[in-house]
Image 1 (tube, rainbow, N blue to C red):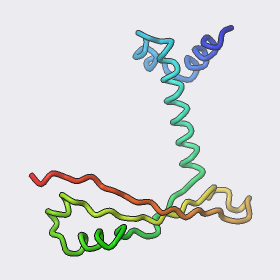
Image 2 (image 1 turned 30 degrees about the vertical axis):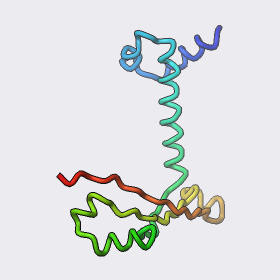
Image 3 (image 1 turned 60 degrees about the vertical axis):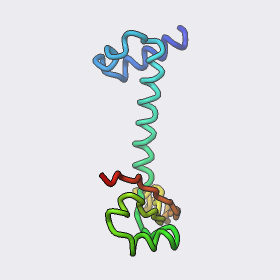
Image 4 (image 1 turned 90 degrees about the vertical axis):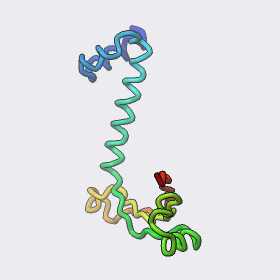
Length: 120
């Protein structure tokens, strides 16, 4: 049996028939797209189970952002939004803390850049 046939059988086992009917016109190429979608979705579910994020602090990124936050009027802040730095604690495997004997935490600094909105 060819690899494509094995992949096709596995996808038919996992994916509903209605979903496959949507991709019928070019099924050979679309199987890989369906498989990629389900693989990435599964990895995201595993990541969400294994890592819990907790926001510790949020503050303006630099002195200029702090100035904008304090002194600019709200309508101008909507046009030129304030960039923030977030301090996030990532708890690795929080459900297994008793089995592992200790907690694994990683501290991450993340800059956020919101999109500007139109004045009108």
